[in-house]
Image (tube, rainbow, N blue to C red; front, top):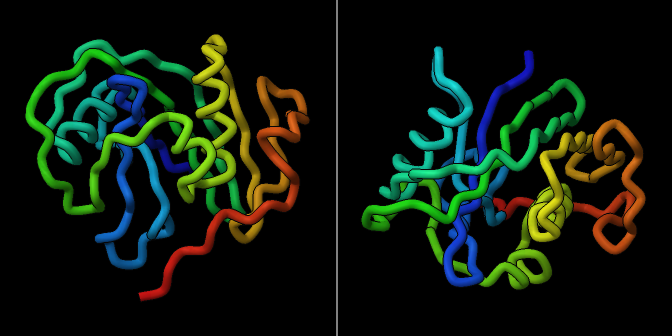
Length: 173
């Protein structure tokens, strides 16, 4: 079964609002940095899911989301289809999150210094290049990115992806 999820990168003053995933037990994203999002609830549209997840995780309310692309992940028997959003129009008070620590981080630091999934580096770079709506397929094997397809064609930009690069391992508690 394919999981349906959303992910949103809130943008402000050259920064993304990032979550350092440190608080959930048995979290496959433990100690990595991510945007905000999560799984669909019954009957939700991608926009409804993203808006709800951002509100639950940060207290912020997104007003004008921009759907940037769809990302398909697979690793063995696990499959996920993620709707990728960005947003610059949001309001509310930033609240603590029970899944991790929220921090505004400069975009270049996110891309080049923080521990993030290798595939995230690719779609964040596509977003920074303001690429039109895209479909990205990321195939992993044991946390190593093995294959990348952009709009159905092999992705070969070695500046963004070196086959076999391992995502930083999750820290053991």
